Image (cartoon, rainbow, N blue to C red; front, side, top):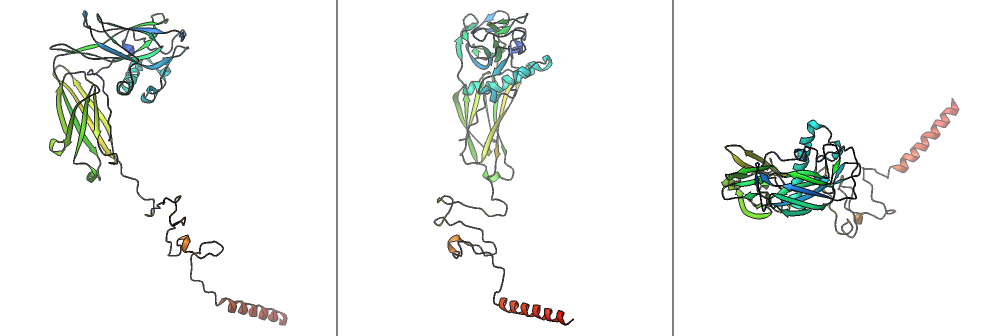
Length: 363
């Protein structure tokens, strides 16, 4: 089975980063003071919409993606460092590009955290507030489930925040605070799943159909069959803000690998999400140059009781078991030499030498 695990963010085009939270100083890496790594911290998160709509019952969770160091910087933790395209957080110093860089880190680590890691802590909001205590110092990814009312769905954008935070005087504050960005949706989302093939020249390897498991918020939503008759496409409608995962069912030896891309559109008139699974075919490795393949048997890489197979060059080299035991060597390639003229040539050569000596003496 080829598993295509692509976990997407909530249905908000612009994801919050730590630079959007409380003065854009939450994850600065060039602090003036040192961090007391012997301490623990806390994080308070507010879930509200507009000026005064507070939410009760919002399920919130946090993932620690980086650890704080004494010199006032942060380093990505194991697992997250491999997923992030930006490895060194200390290089995020340019204010013009910092927000985009933190957004890139968020986009990189979010699918991995949601799909493969357990939250470091979970809580439910009361009067719009959630507080996490006794936290290890570092950078946290904050996520929350959608809040659904009768006619509306409220979506909270995931974001990054540091514990501790820097205040306006560049002092570290170990009781961090954060507010969330909330969007309200009053309509269903149009979703589409497309299958594309990247196998030019090998279309005969392509299956006639394929099953794809659509997983909604880590639970199986539906299994669909994609084929030519439905143009390798499936469409459905759902409320916004769900996390979608796709698992493709293919034989392990099919030769196909899969990747997923996404496209989202949210504006006054449109709410759509399009996911495309692309299968790329990789041909098996062919024989080495020359067209001959060497096959090793179970006998330590040799067949016929240890006799090595050699290519039949000019019909002269055969199995070792078939060669004469001449000093234990293989027979050399025969090139048409004849040995019976050798004595005659030796005698003739000696005669010519003697004749030449005599002629020289008579001169």
